[in-house]
Length: 288
Image 1 (cartoon, one colour):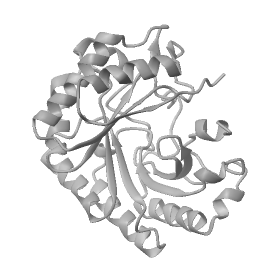
Image 2 (cartoon, one colour; image 1 turned 60 degrees about the vertical axis):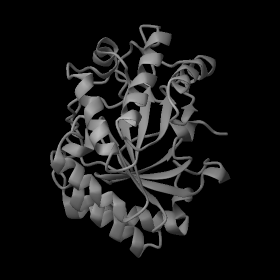
Image 3 (cartoon, helix red, strand yellow; image 1 turned 180 degrees about the vertical axis):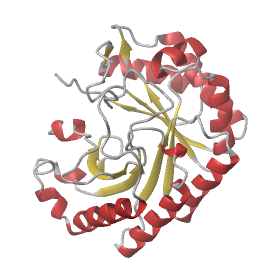
Image 4 (cartoon, helix red, strand yellow; image 1 turned 90 degrees about the horizontal axis):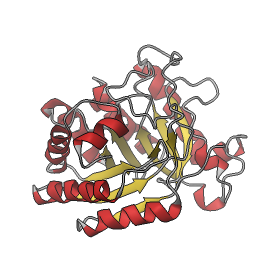
């Protein structure tokens, strides 16, 4: 498989400012991204993030109508298959030449966008118009806002069609949480927010395990992550899966590296041993 196409996740495509196509290893096909944080502001500072926040984003605010128009155009290219003629995607393997999802996963935290509910509703209408009703809408979130009734109501718009919520849970202890996600927020509060959301909507846990200064999280931390997952499940959370993955794109922080396939399998096995939620592993790729 040509792995270059899987590591190309630029959020700039031709002249578009808010919508972008990528071939995703976790989506196993074409994901049409929606960037509702073009200003690059985020309430986390994850060292493994590939977003370079030292340079300005393509826009300071979201032009709602322009965003929908860009996504409309990308859906048309994807539906007809014209997207595969673009130089970025010409080497895409045949098995990945399928439209998998529309994903809110931009340069910040999507749930901070005040019109997220409106955007999800309009995306649903666009999918219907293009004959893509079976395509999922995905929201990737760091889970910091899931405690909010208002935010969860916006996410409730997802239930109008196929959907997934990918909620970040990179740590089981406060110390590793602060290190791997660059925040002083309380991990307990994040877990409570995920639980509140997962009681109302199905949730997929996404767990990024990079190396930091040459070391991964360690066996004890993996066990603690598994225990947090089990806690959410025990408290009534509807969890579909845990996605355990490592870096595949160049991080902004040079201290961050990739966990080997074998080691990632070992850590995933530890998480799997602590919970009955299915665990799937996604291997990394060196960017050098």
